[in-house]
Image 1: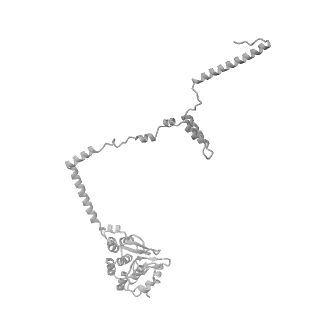
Image 2: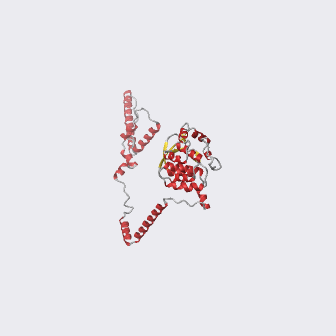
Image 3: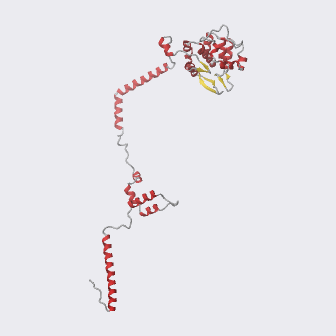
Length: 331
């Protein structure tokens, strides 16, 4: 009997008001301790005290799917169905933020599109922080305006499916609701007026002859782009010598040391060939001879051969003489 809807309650969206909450969540609320102890025989007058004692909002949480006191009070309001004036007073209450959110959530469930926009959009100017219980049992901090935006835009809030409402653009086109005016429009208009005044002052200053003179002086004093170009320093020249200097500076001793085998005892063929080619290109080997030296070698070898032949002939003639034979002919 305690879980039934009141007889005088009207249908909402064509059904029982309690049916706006899913059956699984309703059974969890009916079995909760808060519902049995705090929500039993609760009317609209006593509900104000219960709403003022709230310290967070949320749906169900934990592994056992426990409902929050906020959700229990929402289901109790759907059961007893308070009048619209009481709900509007909940929304307009600026002292207790959780009472305001309780009325806003109930208005979103039971009100039509015009009531939702007319009563909930003014709460966009409330930037106070509130705590919300997440499904994993951890608290998070949000703002009142964020929660109101969630009620007007999302399809689900606090584990309850929200009824559909018409879009604001459609209501504005039909003329049922006026365009929304933000509280920041006045501040933005003041900022734009200040910017326009500053621009007009700058234009007046630029048109004055004193500004033109000062601008010409600045242009005359400004350095030319050629001054900013820097010539390379002598250090950079020393650090990057030409390849011809590198070849000349390296001595054959340096190449020999470089060609010595590494302590590991082996080197690849490619590195040996590259070092050999570099050595041959950079420093000429001392065994090479010029063309002027080659004929001298030939002449020396010819004279040596002639002297050796003369000695052999002399020895042969001496033997022939001792033996009584005619000597060899000599040219």
